[in-house]
Image (tube, rainbow, N blue to C red; front, side):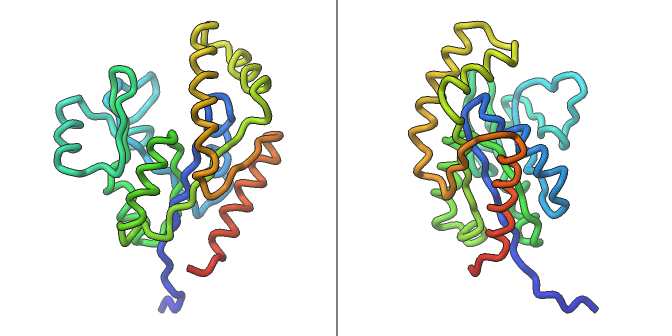
Length: 201
C-alpha cells in the first residue's frame, strides 16, 4: 500500500533569446532530473530528418491545427513565419494532475499566456514557475549566434533586435537566471527546481 501524500506537479517554463543556451540547458535538466518531463509542443511545420511525431512535436496540418484552436485545445499558440506552434492542454493537464513535473521551453508570448491562464485555471494556479535566461551581455550573445554558423549577418541582426525586445520582459518572470558557464547555468536552474519542489503552496 502506497502511503505517500499525492502532490500536484509543477510546470517550469524557460524562455530566453536565441543563443542564450536555453535549449541545451533544458536538455540537460531533462537528462539529469528523472522526475522532470518535457512538454511536447505542436507545430504545422514538416518534420525534419529524424524527428518523430508525438516525441519531438505533435505534427498537424494547418486545417487540423486551426480546428483545434477553434475548439479551445491549446493553452497558447503563435504564428511564426508561415507555421503555427502551440501547447496542447491535454499534454499538460493529465501529467500535472498525476503529480508529474513538466519542463517547457517557449517564447515570451507563450510564457505570458500561461501566466495569464494560471490566474484562473485551477490546475495551473500556483504551479507555473517561469525562468528567463539572461545572456551575459549583448556582445556575448552576438558572438554565440555567429559562432553557431547557421545564420547570415542579416539573420543575426534580426535575432539581436528580437533579443533586445525579449530582455525587456525579464522582470515579468519569477526568476531571471543570468547566464554564465553551461555548468553554472545548469546548477542554478536545478536549484530553482529543487527549491520550488520544497515550497509550501
